[in-house]
Image (cartoon, rainbow over all chains, first blue to last red):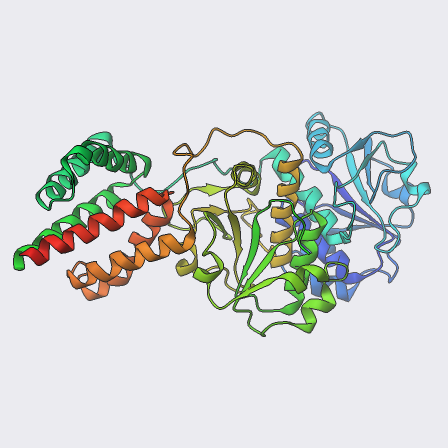
Length: 248
Length: 248
């Protein structure tokens, strides 16, 4: 069963290679999309090559809806995006994947029925397909080299859907170490330990530079973002060096 | 000739299939990245399957730099991201591709030498690779289905690089000195110096824990973001402790 999650339908229009249909299914499911529609697939349906390529996302192919023409596939849709390799001479808004999926997320949240069309591998969507869309999505690629294939194009749109809806996984910006961060007093004690031993060892030399050297070392400790385990390790290193010395 | 544009180096670590190396080159060039480094490719180099798959982006393979080990590939780098399928239990910041490429764009603009590591297809980067990185990139995929391949992972990172450099957002992250950041080879030498002396001093004890302790220490060095002056100071600390011991 498809998930209950409201989402855009991904519509593959006249796809040619079964492998690419399988790759599109995998790309979708990586980012939590699981509703595919297929219009006039060149090699019929179901397609064993698609199934072979879809490892783990085969359910999407089993549940995909097959249509004989594009108007049929869009019959229940209220807002349609068409992906094209470059903006066409058409009076429609052209969005990046990012902006398009922002808009799609808003529309889906408001109860609209959204679709995103992807054309056949060789030539892409025809003008006759694009006239059925409300807006165009174009991935801003290197103008000297635009070679995204179908699966990659679906991947980038699905990735942006995930990014805009944020409902797959939340990654904090910098959760940092999972461990316990060292507290100020622990870092202070570490700094004192090193200063004391390094003074004994004659590290802060000459006298005139001693203050600056101590400052540099304190700066380093405070910049390090240490866990308690790190602090313990650094204490351990110094203790061991002292024991080593004392053993002579 | 590689483009003059300042950019991160894309480092493929022990890639297995030539096809995937070719796909990575295409993914990069779609978004204007053209500097690839390859470390210990399973099937040697050059690889005809990589060339066959790279249509139009073959120049990236011709110009790729080959390295016999990862430290060599990172010798001139000052900031390294490692891509992993899921956050590991390591004390490093974990970024989404978006945040990571924001940060990379700022660092590259400030003259830093950035690398992004991608692991072998089957198992990904090993802990021994990741300890050389300053931060981790994880693509937030569907937790029920994470099946991004190497080319797709490179594609998403390159796409985010394009997105972020199209209009760089300013992140107030990573404070610290604007000074001369230490390079990979300098940090490697520091790690070796400490490992050697601490081994003599009997720090890595008991034997069964020695590997883990060394890993923790390497992780600490790579997380510290040290300037050259910091590295010199840390060498100086260790040298002084040894001299102190030797004076008895």
